[in-house]
Image 1 (spheres, rainbow, N blue to C red):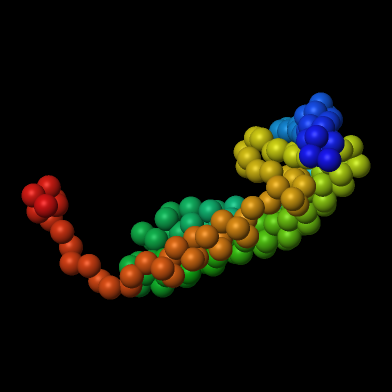
Image 2: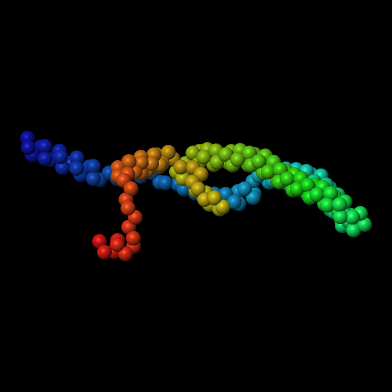
Length: 192
């Protein structure tokens, strides 16, 4: 009976050693995100849309700036003829107008940045979702991003160890003593 058990155990061992474990090939790729955004039609259209809006709204502001420059030029030629009191009053008005034009330029720039930023964020989210779906459909384990902002655009969830790292770091932080240590001078640290 013992010989039979030994023979069965050895045969199981030989059979199990003969089998090779199936290893899934990890399929990876990358996307150059800067080239993608330059070549993607929707991104080009979005850029053109806001460039057009900036030019259109900028023309109105440029017309006001041109009028201001004309008024400033005529002010300089009339200042000596109309006296110092007139020049001070008119100069203050021109300064106030110049300041308002500066604020208008800033407001226009911020408005366009904010509007385009919202649409660009939506576009980027859509691109990331597309790449994720593409990766799943085509059997990729990872799709890396290169270019201006290098990042992982898609990865199988089983490779995500973020929670484990956060837990380990938080546990380590909680375990460290919270006493304030006196500052050690460089020379004293060497002596110890």
